[in-house]
Image 1 (cartoon, rainbow, N blue to C red):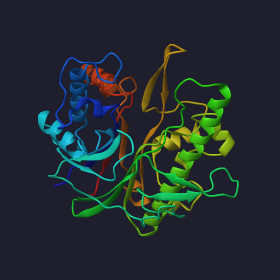
Image 2: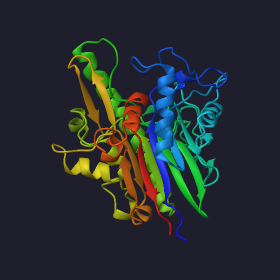
Image 3: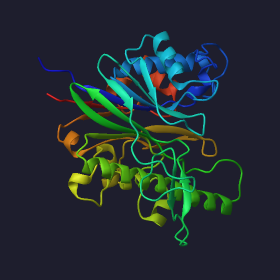
Image 4: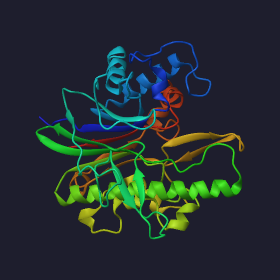
Length: 348
């Protein structure tokens, strides 16, 4: 009997935290959520419809509910899964974010055992070079002035060991720094902050890449997934630095055995001025229209890529199977400004 594929998903759920009280109970009422003109009840229901439709064995949740002295990421996610009777009903969380947006993993314990398994040595207070543990600090010269600066992840990547079908997979969940400045500012301020944010985002991807190299050298079956807030050709500042953070994480300049693979990233790299897949949809008020971008990725190591996985972006307008189910299409538009990605891995 052939084992069914392992399906993993990546999903940035916009302001998921705002849908729970301090005890982790869903706020299933008519009050407005942080989603524009959407009630908390409607957003919660839409998220549940999407997660049920994905039928994933494990889901990386980006912007998961907050972890703090009063709030628990794991409690909120497991309460949500129990309330909506999801098969993926067990949660694991790693290092706490400095924001109200955590990175967590919701999974089916009948198929997967997931353990927080961070690598790297903790850095001292002033930081360390190389690839220290993700909840500490990296020292790097971002502006090439000869002086090292201290870099911290506001959302430390989630490193997991997944035990599934008598094998071990390593997983790194990512939510890299957003490059877009926020608030009112002059054009000069906008440019300066954009460049600073781009440097920070690239530094995070370089730090991540060093961890990836360590794991590929060790022969790990590796999956790196999440919201990188970046993609090939996404903005004009990429020309200033010569490459995107995605290209760094993939390791495109390295030998084939040290590269990660994601077909959507490859398509975007090959067609910078042509058709490209997208995973997020944002409303731009000045232009009075939506802007779409490829921000979310599932990258795999060469041994997993050799198994010919199936990737899918659950885009409500670009996926015919989604379009054919109005309830799912509408739920994807209500739940978040990002759309989930899945990958099916076969081990038979």
